[in-house]
Length: 124
Image (cartoon, rainbow, N blue to C red; front, top):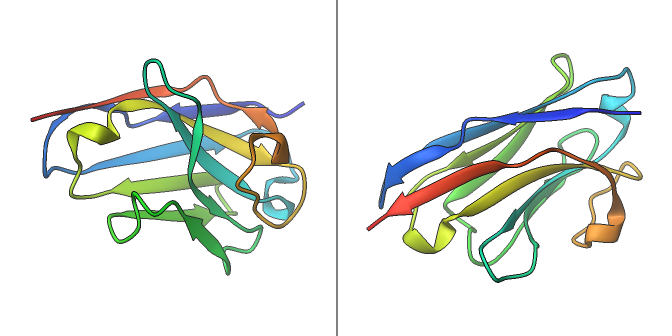
């Protein structure tokens, strides 16, 4: 069983930045892809960004491309999401997810474990 603990959410003004972190338990983190998803009120959970086991391959949703950066530190069992130029439409609960394999997926079904979520609120 893997546990994921997110941190770094909060309230920020439009145009500001936040950095989310997700720390994973266990010794197999470096073998698995990781993803960040978000869910706004009344909307379905959607993928934001994902990264392969080595960090050499990444994916970004069109809505965040050029503003968000996903990265990982396998020595620290941690994945990050740097969010710049935040917009009110980025407001959501952000979840990190632990993949079922080494390559990323854009599907919720491609992930085996989920964090509890961290709230990001962007004011206009």
